[in-house]
Length: 394
Image (cartoon, rainbow, N blue to C red; front, top):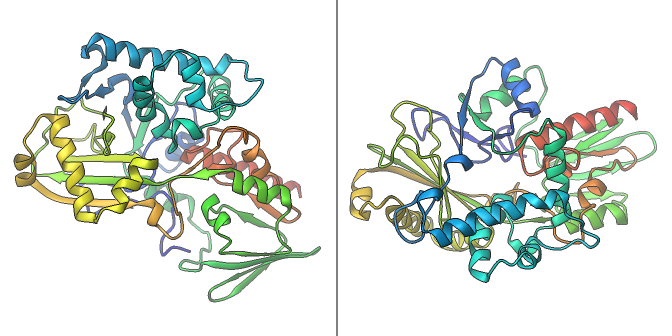
């Protein structure tokens, strides 16, 4: 549908003197399939330790967790500990992450911290995250040689370089949004805005928001079970604010800082590169919706004001040295309508049901990644491998 490949990955080659990701940015985990493809493509990686170098602001300059007041430090540490215990918890009934943390004795103030620390990463709120789905994700991490999201890196040349490599030799039609998918006993016909294609099978990798919007007509209609899975999944807003300065206003060790205001999560896209002067805010769910409701200029100004507090540098100084800024609001992207999918309590099987083939239709994408870590590029890639095997076996 787009005039480019990549979907919710989108590399900007013009914002800085290095590739800047406007969408998905990291490789999460040390043993995931993305590393294999990056190596095969002859590309490089830049390791980044976000969670090990986490900084938090309690209204003052962001500090390492170890340097925070004892009460806040203890809250963050206990949240991490209890979150990790989900992997071995006995959930006879699926509950939300909020209810789980409340049962572990966390206060309403601690839940505010947890919303940024834990739920924002999943583009969700504490109340809309299924503990059973989180547990499945953790079991997969354990299965994959004890892998965790903590082992992270960026592709030096950007995600676009990887997908340009992977798409070599493929015939790809751009700017061709699909309008209808028809299947019969012999084949599938896909009709776009300009032409139709017929084949034995069709692999669908659409975001769940697009499937939910019914902008594409299926004939015959998808089964009740498939539609139930599609509508069970949730996909919230995710918004990036990017700022480029004449000089860096942070030390080279800065990788990740959080606070519980609107522009809640910050990182340095140029970490590990020489003289990086770019910083990014990525905020999600209700916080992203607040920024999206503002004009572009006001949302960027809001982020800059909050950045001045996090860095303890005057807003005037930041504005004086600001070269350029950019907002990317994925909820307003017509072919995404959000960031990535999460599973609400009571719908833990939705990913499995969405991934299941339906006659000549096959399904992949991060929302279907039940046998890999969802909400990630590698989850999407691995779901594609799984779906390709299903097509071959058909």
